Length: 76
Image 1 (cartoon, rainbow, N blue to C red):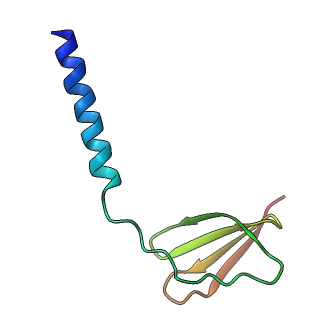
Image 2: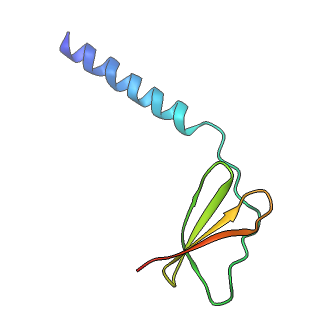
Image 3: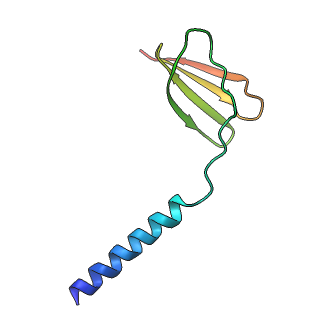
């Protein structure tokens, strides 16, 4: 009985992972223009923005629709 329960539980977890990761991928910007000399080290996004972490320890936050730079955050 315990073996059957464990197998069913494993199948449910695998099914949920497949359903979750097979959903539509988020829309990524076609082109991201960074200031000269900057290189991207990380990327994240929200519903109406996306952010790039640069090699100069800055976070650049861009507007998703216009691509305009919204905010720059310096990391220490």
